[in-house]
Length: 378
Image (cartoon, rainbow, N blue to C red; front, side, top):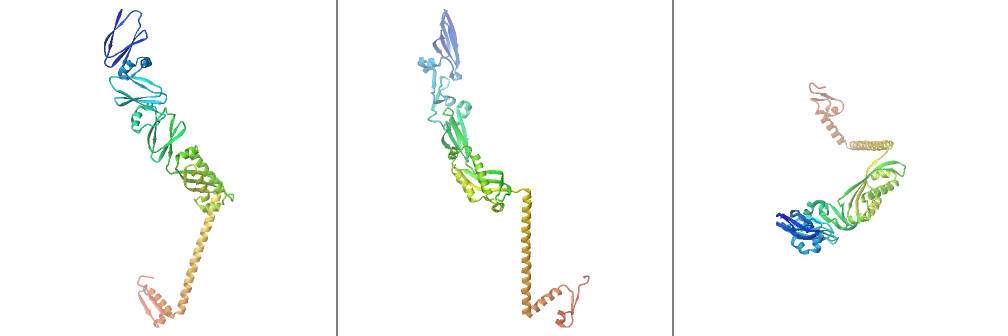
């Protein structure tokens, strides 16, 4: 006969089995365990600071020795659609995924658990997100952040569940593969560059098209089409190309940057059915081939020259008409003629130092004027 001495420390527990049969779990203290020849003694030592009881005896103790389980452990168990948030003294310790059974040691800390049905409650309350983020991948949570000016589309098993306003979100990864897609609700610009177009009068030109748009119904836009931006790009490209191809170069240049309302209404109507509001649609640039640019420059230069000649002729005609009117007034009014002569004489007198008049006023006005300029002048 043999006695085996077993010492159990304050942070330890010891499981004792004989010949593969459970005997007891020893708490802190010093023990002498009786054995005999032919008896196989099994001793497993555990540190309760590890919290979880990791042993092949777990299922046996839960099913066959509920008294031992109740005395030494806190049992946390989840089914196929549950997760459990395990707390140690009120602080999140770990998250158990579905279909798990774990025993946690009683003693140094109080272990509690919150079991959640992930199918009934796939979303996680915001006040629990910070603690779950600390666990990282071991939290079994899919985190998402929806920024201002955007919205989130929550999919569960590829089925749209609801839209999410700006904020921080978390969803249990075990709840049917949750997925959040972010949709920008702000006004955006779509540019279609370098479009080669042949006008109605067979002139080749290249245009850059620009349009403003905004998603107003994110759920409708996502359900209606897979790649919204690519679809809008092609719709804008084809519609504007067809519209410009029916016009002459002169008509295209006359519109400058605006796209005609009929073409714009087609694009707006098509995109409105997808939950998108389209604003202004314009031709950002109209680029002509080199020889065509030279011809257009010559046309513009000729037009400007003709306009300048027309203005010059108008001014000359106005001046001639003014002289004719003045002559008629002088012819009909001798006094006005005399006043005009005096005005002219006044201007002459201002420029001379001495004036000598011979033959009276009449001689002065005819040819008897002698002007003497100031000294030193010519």
